[in-house]
Image 1 (spheres, one colour):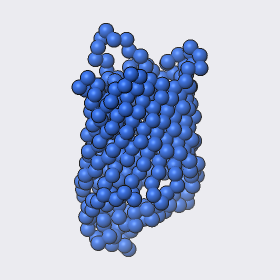
Image 2: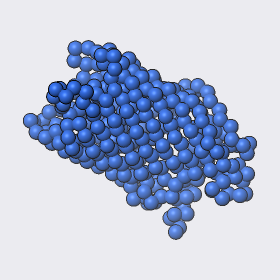
Image 3: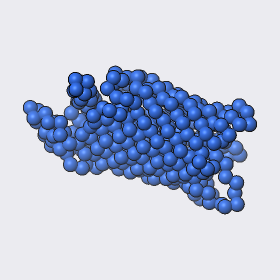
Image 4: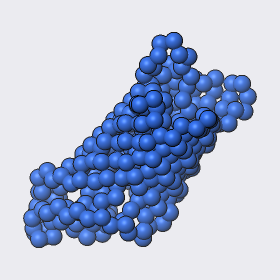
Length: 312
């Protein structure tokens, strides 16, 4: 009981200190298996799998901690206009404590096809819906925490660049360029939107596949996240793929978690992945880790075309 109370106080303190009683609608859910669904962080990824591709991710973070993040995402994207354009949509639903957020994005990419590679430039347009039930905190001594905002919406947009070959890729993106604030400091909820370069979240991603033997491939991945006023976050992982069928690997995210990754290609088009994160932060004593499930499917347009597994 004592640990649960301490965890609740820590979670509330984080909300207050980070938001200063102003709720940020700019959010970037963190996924351990981001490499299978980069459309969530880079619109230039649209169409890169060279087929109609659908991916879903379910993440339960810090299991056992009251109010811990729970996130679900779905994305769908495909190349069009002789693969010169990529179009996609993505949806995210997230709850953290008394906060609930949903986002819908339309992603478009202009793809420059080269002999053995593709360079793409992408734009993202979206809307985010925010609900803050601060009254559920039962802090009746502070009027600022007696507000339930109802559902508010705010616009956003992002930009990205993505370059890939059959064996490696690199991407740079700013997924959300608008700073959306839900201000409850006056006792009522007001949405404030402005372009604030100081609050941009920059993502750099890279990955490759190396053939170690006819039956074994190594797939390393790297993600860097940078935002003004915060330490650089590094997410590095590597998994080994056996016979283009099953994979296993490890990951490390600075200041946050160490992870185990497992997955399989149920068919050449259907992939299933799972990851477990062991917390390394101050919340380590208050949760039993984080779980994430990934499902993906690539639809084949041409029935006569030989389908080969996509590695990223």
